[in-house]
Structure formats: C-alpha cells, structure tokens
Image (cartoon, rainbow over all chains, first blue to last red; front, side):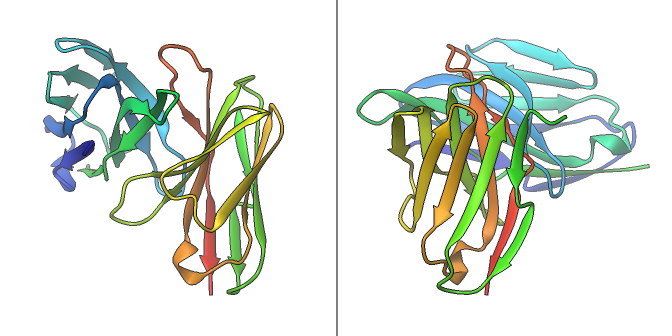
Length: 114
Length: 113
C-alpha cells in the first residue's frame, strides 16, 4: 500500500536554530515528490518538486533533498514567519488510465519562536 | 487576485441539507480536483476532472457529486450532508504537464450540525 509518513508531527525551534523535517515514503512507482507550506485556515502553497534521488532544490531558508526512500526539508536559520505546517506529497500512478495522483502525509507543524 | 477561488469560505449547515461548494480558476489549467482535510489525516482526494467531459472518482467519493461547468469551474455537492462530512475542503488545479504541480485554493470550512 502506498504510504507517506512525516516526522516529527510538531517541531518547536528558536529563531536561528536550524533543523530538518522528514518525509518517508513507500510507493509502487514514484513520479515526483512535492513539498507544500500550509498556514492556518489557508490552502497549501507549493514549494518544491523533486523527481530523482540525489536531487536538491532551494528557496530562501529552505532546502529539499530526495533519496530513494525519503525526503528532507532543511530549514536554515529559521524566522518566526517560517512557522506553518509543511506537507509532503508523492505523485504516483492511479487508476486504469495510469493517472497521476498525490498521496499526502499528515504534515509537520513548525513553530519558530523569536 | 487569487488564481484559484472557492466559495463560500465558511458554511454551517444541518444534517440532510444539500450543499454546493464552488471553485473557479484563472490559471487556464485543464485539470481540477476536490480534496477534504481532516485533523490528523492527510488531504484525501474526492473527485478529479481532466477536462469538461472527463470526471473521475477519487478515494472518498461516497456522499459527494461534482459538476464541471466549464474549464474554469468545478463544483462539489453534498446531496444530503451528514456530520462526518464536517471538514476543510480544498479545490486544486494542475496544468497536466509532466510536473503536473497542483495549486490549491484557500479552502471552505464546512460544518454539518
């Protein structure tokens, strides 16, 4: 069964304290791995897409990496405005037409204190 | 202006009522999706549509129906709402390319009493 697990469920950091969020997955055919940011009461906001092991992408204080079984979202010197829930999703084939679909993890709630 | 909009943003209704949630997009994408989000669970796919004539069930379509009125509009209906349909509902769109990144609307918070 395709599955995505994120850890930790919640993480509290001091401003400037770097850390990493984990997304591990077991899927039959990975077509891509996505990271989203979700603020309270809002829709998920796209951050990154990774396609193959070894790939890395960066945006401001965030860097996403991918291996064959997991992805990490590294947060360097976080600021309070980085506080949000970070969602990981894997894209797999689905249905008779080999349609792509996203399987989401439950997210990591990040709180960055000043 | 937002590329993906949802109306209403909040709705409280009673058990047995028919409810329609609407989604509009200006991104020009062919593919549209409806998800629900419950506390402690990941986003779950309800229905998806790859064009106006192509509508498909997702993982949790029971109790829901959809209508794709145009490329830009995709509506979700709850024919007879029940309390366990209380959740956050999100519409998303994607371009249908290899990357096929999904872009989400702001969500509708639905409460069924």
